[in-house]
Amino acid sequence: MMAKNNALIRKAALAMGMCLLLAPLTMTARADGGPNSAAPVAVRIEESTDGPVVERLVLGLNKATIIELPADAADVLVSNPAIVDAIVRTPRRVYVLGMQVGQTNAFFFSESGRQILNLEIRVERDLVDLHDALTRHLPNANISVEAINDNIVLSGTVANASESDRARDIAARYVGRPEQVMNMLTIAGREQVMLKVRVAEMQRTVAKQLGIDLNALVSAGGVPMALSTSNPFSLVGNALSEDSFFNGGSIDGGNNIEGSLKALERAGVMRTLAEPNLTAISGESANFLAGGEFPVPTSRDSDGNVQVTFKPFGVGLGFTPVVMSEGRISLRISTEVSELSSEGAYVQEGASYTDADGNLVSVPGLTIPALRVRRAETTVELPSGGSLVMAGLLQESLRQNLDGFPGLKDTPVLGALFRSRDYQNYETELVIIVTPYLVDPVHMSELTLPTSGFVPASDAETILMGRLNEVYGPKDRPAEGGIEGPVGYIME
Image (cartoon, rainbow, N blue to C red; front, side, top):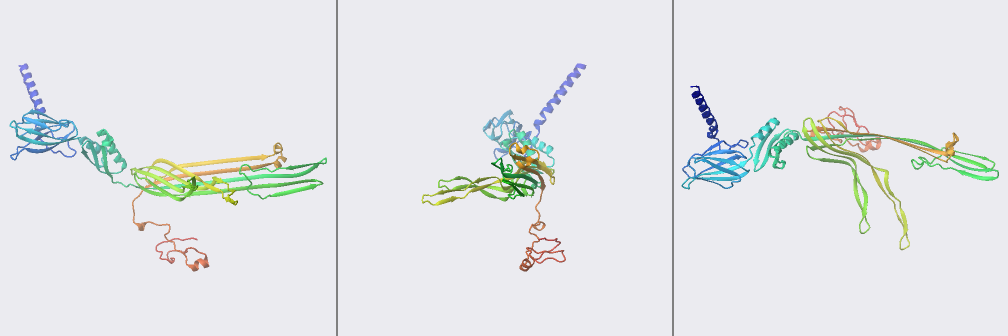
């Protein structure tokens, strides 16, 4: 009795398992699934009295579906078996498998040769999993996914460039090759970035010179002797001043001694401040230059004419911003401050020659100035409104030379008469600070120009008072020229 009950239980379990296996095969779905939907499990074709039925089917790559025919089919013709494979399970049930991305069609014929169905099939990647992944990892984005042949097109809106890049990377890993992903996402967030750069530099120089030159004519035992010293300033190259601070001499019989003292101290300071501002769209490069260009001879042509190339100098700024998110802006920055300098300049002395007619021809000299440059280039990440010291420099250079007569210059106390001292100290401190801002356009009335509030002085004020512009006080006594609203003071 127990064995019989076990046999009945096994038969019931087997019947239930067969029902579960056959249940999906009897489900029906639309033949033209949505753009991101999976392939239909089963397509049931209704019989038509007007001729063969024409249907369209979107089939996922490496997916299969079931075609249920309204009449018995004896023959199936697939135009491109490499794209779609058809397996006849029963006369009215056919399995269609997507083998390769592409388009093809299949014809179903009855035993008498009558065409039952014309099925237009497009095989594409099933994008349901990709769409789910994008929704899960980028919940705030509105992204649509579309398959075109073996490529994927991303469309919709994202908050910033970082989300756009992440969506493209996810799609590239899904399809296998990045070149098969076409990114048409639109960034909805603010993309315009204004970069403010401040270049501040302080330079201090100190130079000291002390030298004594002696000229002596003495007679020792009836033998005349002459002594002359001219101590150079080898560090600077020459004396800072040609004036002698002390001249003295004494005559004792035939002896004559004269001395010349040259002493000078020079201190200098230089302050450089440049604040270039530039605005660009996220992902695009922008360049700014306030300065000029100077000619540099490079070669001569066949006629002997000098060819020149112009080199820029001044305050320059170039940057490429990428808005990663509201709190992250990636910046590729290149900035420089340059000026013409005589230090390191190329100097060619003039010359004279006699031409064929015996005339003296003078060729002027040529001086090509050098450039003194402070340049920095880097990539940083900053929030909107945050500042960062992009570059800094603290430099000190100390030079000192002692020139004099060998041996005598080392004599204590009296050795100062036979030597000269040249001293130079150079200090510089440089800081470059960058600050990006996410900006929006505003009305022109909300902007202020450097020329706002300027009113030129009249002829009488210029001649009698020596003024170049109107000088006005509080708003209750405005200057002539139509200035309105709260104003300050324009100083000469």
